[in-house]
Image 1 (cartoon, rainbow, N blue to C red):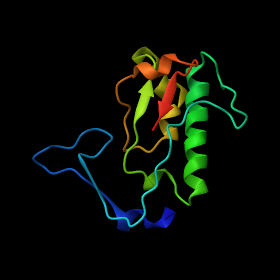
Image 2: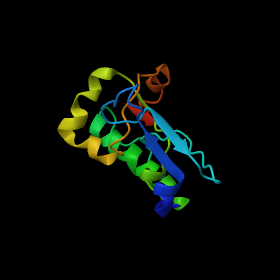
Image 3: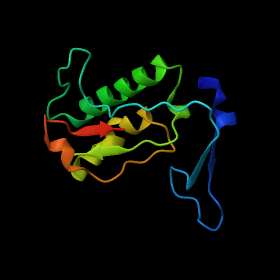
Image 4: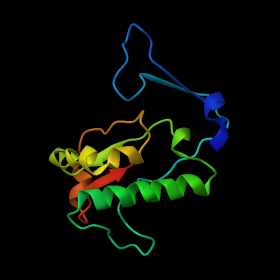
Length: 128
């Protein structure tokens, strides 16, 4: 599936809607296979939290986990049709660019609003 991106996923921005920065208004998926991946958090393979109170370390682990999940089914980030980022506190979003975390995710995805789930277990970021 990793090589099928151009054929199975089209990202569109109709002129009437304008072109938003970093994502597409419409994603047209024409795949015969759909894979659902559970929300990924900053847990390592042993279930231990990586980077307690360290947002860049947690974000790195979350994207590492997402990449592992995708690769296990023959996919890459380019095969994603939707990516939702949950942050415990929007103030921690500022360091993303500074620490290069933005480069770990596909350029057509942008973070969403924070969610109350994140206050449990010390998670600072989760990706679904």
